[in-house]
Structure formats: C-alpha cells, structure tokens
Image 1 (cartoon, one colour):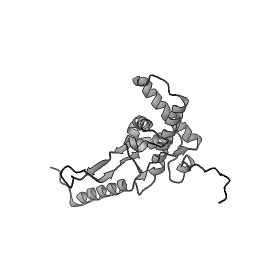
Image 2 (image 1 turned 180 degrees about the vertical axis):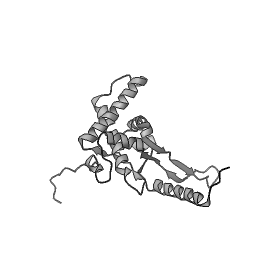
Image 3 (image 1 turned 45 degrees about the vertical axis):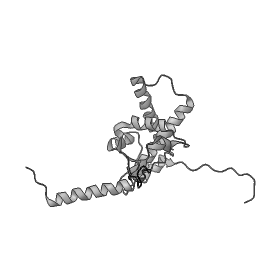
Image 4 (image 1 turned 90 degrees about the horizontal axis):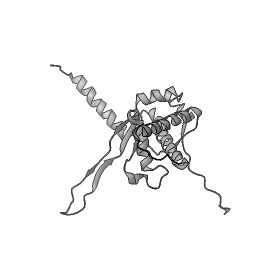
Length: 197
C-alpha cells in the first residue's frame, strides 16, 4: 500500500487552492481580439480550414458559407484564439479566460452563439474547458421564486498542444510578443456631428 506524506497532502491542497484562485482571476473573453500579423492570419486561415474539412468529412454542412458568414466565422475564431493567447502568459489567471456558454449571452454582439460553438468544437483538445455552474437558493416562501446564489461562467485555457501548434505558425506567445500578432479590437470611433463640444 502506498502512503502519502503530510507534505504531499499539503502540496496537493495548495495546488487546488492555486487553481481555484486562477479560475477566479480568469480574464473575460470579449471575443474582440484581431489577428494583426501575417503569421497570426496564417494560423487563423489554417484553423478555419480545419472547420471546413471537418464539416466536409462529416457531411454536416449542405451549403457553402456565404462570404458574410465566412467573415463572421473568421472574426469569431480570431476573437477567441486571440483572447486565449493573450491570456496565456498571465500568471495570475493561469492563462484562463471565461465566457458564458448561454445562447442569450451572445445576443446583440458581433459573435453569434452558433459561430462560437462551431469554433469551440473545432478547437477540440486545443482548449481545456472547466464547465461553469449556478447554485440556486430554495424559495423563501412556499411556491416562491428560486434565486441564484452563486454562478461561474465556463473557463477556457489553451493547451500546450495548441501553443505548439501556434509556434509552428511562428506565432510567438510570450507576453512581450503576443501583441505583435493579436490585439484587442479598439471601440469604434464616433463620427463627429459638427456640434461644438
């Protein structure tokens, strides 16, 4: 029978606490990152090609995507991959980002729920996923509404396999170089109306 020392038990507990803190410190995946280098563009092109090849192999898509739909899928891939890689070097979050997987959390944004699910599925074992949860209270009064007490959105992190894949395309993920490849999109500039300020 194998015995575990007190020091090993303490280290395991400490590791769990570190991971829990990193999950709490995860950065929000806004999905607005954009590929700005040739290398990042090549990486995104290859990832989009993997989606197309997978759909063709499974026969899951009957019609080819329109140009507009292809652009929307590409922006989703850029946004998610950029968020993952920009977070990768963040020690505080352990490279984790969070994003709700509820369909209604995507309404009104540039990224659709359908495209996000497509991108997430296509990345497969390139992304580590920690599923979110909600804890609900029992109603205070019989028949009363249940209220959420605590909730956490799903956490995502690029796997070492994905980092190696990115390096193959010369996308350097070190903290000082990743912004040469992916940047967060700036908010749109408001047009001047000619009114004095």
